[in-house]
Image 1 (cartoon, rainbow, N blue to C red):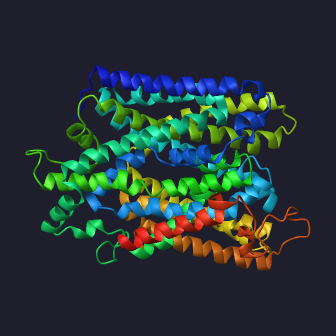
Image 2: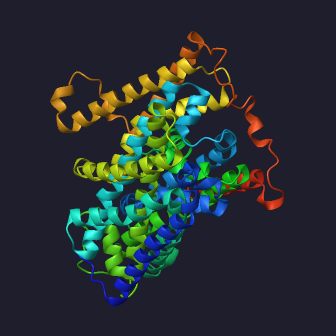
Image 3: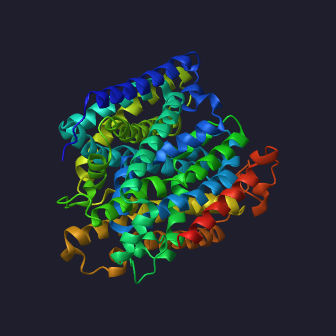
Length: 550
């Protein structure tokens, strides 16, 4: 299925690409005088304000995987997968209230650096390695797997030309400009992304006859459960409501509070208040994806049920987003939609490359060469960015085997996140948590997750090889598995800490809350901009939405 573009569409696409690359290079040139300082390249000289942080957090998280897969999920399952977006809102409140203050006060460059100050060097090394693998896998390789399919349907060019071309365009400003270029371009990309999503939602909404037309169609076909965010286990055994509330926070805390690719925008904040409000701004924006990413897929389902496109059949729901563009968007506006898709893809690639460069430079290179001058460290980071792009491209053939990219990414996360979520959460809230307990929890939890994931893959490819293994290991839905593994890691860290208690020299900066409510005692800005007021308002908004779509 190839979409036909006209001259106006090509002009819009060319304007978008030239704007993004040009803006990124301009940001790099503006920052060039401070490039000799590593903080200028990796952390934008701690100059980021809350609007830039919020928009950049949103753009970093939303990729082609989300655009295509959430539309597919809306078509197949209704609003259900929107839980991942709305649960992220609660986690971002946690980032703002609990984690961001310590990140800013300790003036860290990377999250592994935070773990070393809270626990030990071994914890830092392990998290640095896991974070680099995660950045390349989830934020470069997986988006490329989805992105090339969409771009091929638009331009008709082959797979590897799509992949290499997008990587080169993104690398031009990412490698040169550092975090400042990444964040400024992400602000533009977030606005383009939101604009394109609103555009396709608008046309789908009117074609389906609005909310009333969609509801009437779903009622006539007995599909009203598709409007519910919370399903019982009898309706959906893979994603029951309790799995969402138990498993999503485990994945979310790792993604939003302990993943360098995401949190690096917060680390570059001007001060603690900008870090807090930036995370809350992103939480507020997280209300939108259910309505502009997931709902259009459900609207398209209703449109086809209304037989508004006679003869049009969806043989593979992966094609839903492309079919929506082809059938709903008038000629002359395709260019905006293509620009939105490219914004989602390029934003992810830029973020991952920059965070990988930061991790490698600060957590790997400086360990062995601690006296490396800043200007050399910047060049090492640039080389690491290019290597990250190359490794991400190399993983594409392996990850392309997943039938559902969204489920595949979350399945890997469910086996990777629990030990990291555990040591961060316990370290922040339990003053007695020891370095040795955290170290062994990370190692043993990661080994357990790798073993379980390997058995799950083998059960799909070579089931006879694992007939000896209990079915619980490879048949448990990934959200429930994430919760079970988190409870296991939590129990393990508590037991290990009691057996291997904290030593006198550990955690000299006391990077933990002595009492849980201490996290909201900082005064913050006055008036409506106070972080406590905003956090409460956003939490109430999400609770009301969940009640309306329960």
